[in-house]
Image 1: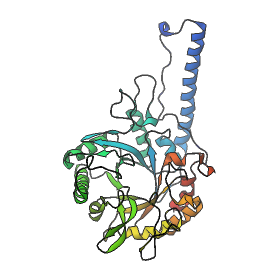
Image 2: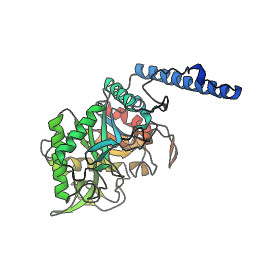
Image 3: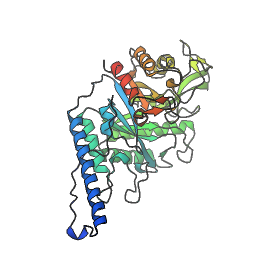
Image 4: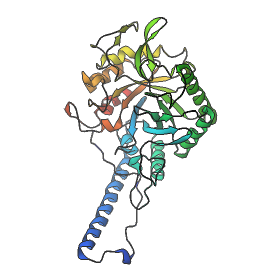
Length: 388
């Protein structure tokens, strides 16, 4: 699949004819001025042609979800993600600081609440991003694609502090609705007790209360989580659990109360174990999550962590390429086709919802630690599996 480069979409025609008094007077300055105008017009024409192709393009209809995280600090826009068959796009990341909600990328004083960089148009001044972003979300909806906003991540952006859950829920829902987004993803990982106070039980209860308040305010919003997978010592011995980091199970109360529509399970970055057919933990490197076979081994065990009759769907997640920035996953010892075959093997599980990857940006790259790669190799390999 060809790599599609988008500068900024949707396209808005701009008038570059400046008043006469602003046109440079010297020959050199005039030449630079004309070159700048021509470059800007050429960029618009190029983007317009891409938009026309994309509007007419028919992506492969998917029966299941192809979930990809889209970095707010990158160059890949929502439109390009859609063109490469991602039908659930998770923006990484939003910020929660007390009851204040925004984007985690600092884009300067004119955008104090952060921005989604691919939607920023730097000319004419002042720069803006929200109208472009919401238009992109509307385009996604026209293609049947959902767009969520994630909070947390490795460099934690989930910092409610002492804000009560009802107040925070109101702020979250207002922000999501203002951007026409479809839901929220909790990617809670390394969170200090300053950012998120309380012991493990209290933090579980707060998260559940927050989600319940969000649902009360807008029950159409999709609620998801992105836990890691790790063995945790319990009263009955060591068992596989959904964790936020290490052995803390901040998601468990919400999972047991069926509060998540989808769980994006990170089957990467915690190697050194696998499971047998009875889901008993095996402490070994061979067959761990750096091997494709881990996907079909762990998926039935994750399903057992859901309450009986749960409608929650699980998307096992993998890094999109084999670079360090994508994460340590099955590509360390496997290929895209082998990974796709493992997803095929778990399609019969009642909890199967599709596949997830970090990230769309990583999938767009033409090389990784193994050398050259075809852009969007991950989504391309999964499309045949997820389309029927």
